[in-house]
Image 1 (cartoon, one colour):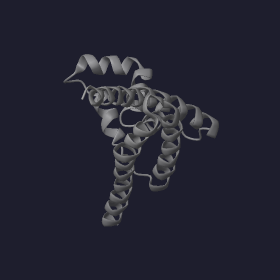
Image 2 (cartoon, one colour):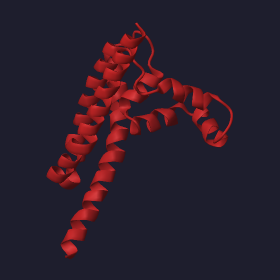
Image 3 (tube, one colour):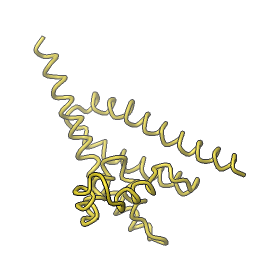
Length: 155
């Protein structure tokens, strides 16, 4: 039974790491190369679709591969970085935004998820989280594209 649990967690974690690698390491750079400064346009629906697929996997495996329990405990405990933790404890929107950016909108949704939420509510929350993720990562990719394109134009 214990080995089955480890195997199930390992499989779920491997799928998460693989999807992050493929999306962040291959797909997003390709989007940036293809769309340049307009990377925001295809990035938003891509992030949204990947997060819905991730939510399906999360519900299927029922494993906390995002280690959100550690995050909840870290925010609640008193100790190092207390000023930052106090700000987070007092502002749930800030927690939602920061989890949407890193690791992903699915983590922010799962962090605050309530039982028996409607599908429309899930879509709304994931869509809002995906906007923050797209703004930060798409903005970063556009800036990186700008730097690289201008650097090569100098030579």
